Length: 392
Image (cartoon, rainbow, N blue to C red; front, side, top):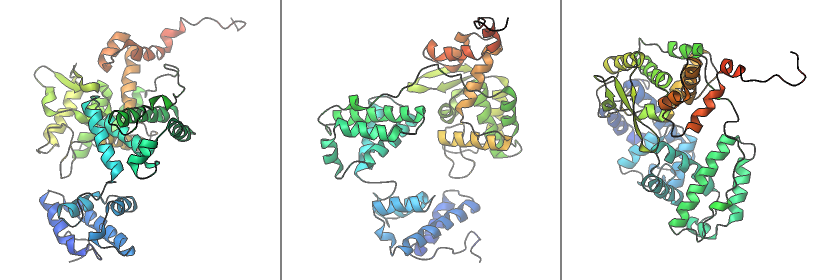
């Protein structure tokens, strides 16, 4: 039997004795042969990584696990298997330690006390990890000694040479973190005021949408003769025709679609629930995916992976699908949110009023919608006054 066949032995070194059990777990979980082969090869690379450092499987401590995941991309499933098998301490992997413990508590606080969505919580935790990684050890003592100068110095260093959006995201996350460490008794003084604001002017720029022809190119790039193509086409159609955010598309559940009423329920920001009409193109795309592609599985999500184990797609996966569609269509890579902007910029040109645009986008304030008043240049041209001294 060759090493390329599903049962072939490819792992040598410290993890070789666990290869057969790893294969068995993957196959019982429903992984296809190709996926099993790829993951076993990842185990082989992880085993060589350990062997080169003179380490055995039982020597995978939390710091070693973090280094292994960084040095061998995709080794998370291998570490999870070793933990479940009792080979590796349950605390190993994914940055376990004081920082990880604090971030877990921070995430629970953001969810329970602030009511933030899982996507926002992940974003806040990612930025908070950068800040916490720069503090001295032990972490508890470093937080007790934390002062305004350290906070301001970190923010100035981080924001240097970064765009406004990135800087604002860090500012928001660190302010939330500083509130949390204060209310939890880790810092004696509330240091939120030490986080400098980022200069930025609301509504200063035009909304960045795609032309109608480019949206059509993205949709046409999906090969609907394949399961993956039907799923990706349905996702892009939902984004382009309903103006959903990527996270909202990922969160769509089977029970959210009311086929009889022709409506779909959207789980938006702040646990907000809204109902939108289900246009015919969207309904057809969803029906084609649900009846001709999506497997029956335990997940209630509309959009799931096409390979076992079948899981709900993450917002990151939706962004990746958009990125691959851009590549196929020969367009520069754009985020999934660009399709939301595209719908909103086309609606005023088609005669929709701003309140109607706001209703479709489910904006909480008219100010957020007012940015799209600037995109209909033909309507604005009659309001423009001649430039003094210009040609008549």
